[in-house]
Length: 173
Image (cartoon, rainbow, N blue to C red; front, top):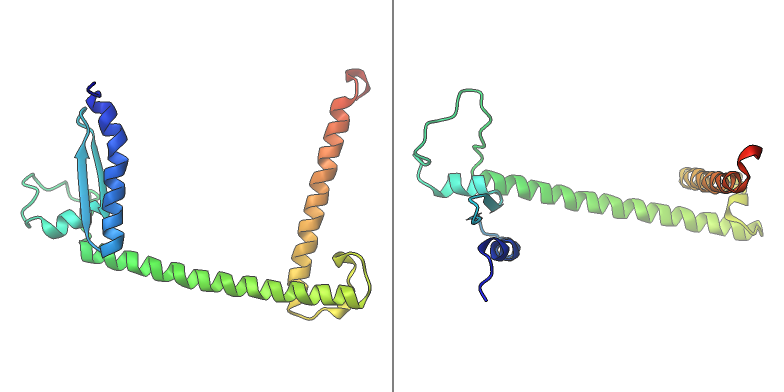
């Protein structure tokens, strides 16, 4: 049984592009894959971008078509430029991850101090802590936690009021 070409293309294209992505990531390679469906629709994958790979590795006079009109948006980034841009974005991502980890550490430390203040005051609930017992680092975390608690309680109250209103007969609302 022969599959219809469109169906076969639809199923195999993601595998082709996944393989191209893996090659690009594993070998830090410049990869461009352009596949045309049986209906003539173009599908492309590129790392760093298909356009940058083609501009880098095709002859300078390619494509042999007239240049676009002045002012038209044209991608002129080479693979090296695109790779540098992607590398910069990856560095920024790693820097952001470090900042996020540091912030979570700061919040965890503040939460621990709030729990210690709760235990020292022998309070059942963290929100009953005397704010005078907290330091400058813990107050913003405590304030944010109180705001989140207030929002959660308000949502619960709104849901309960909505449920009560929907249970009342129409004439009594």
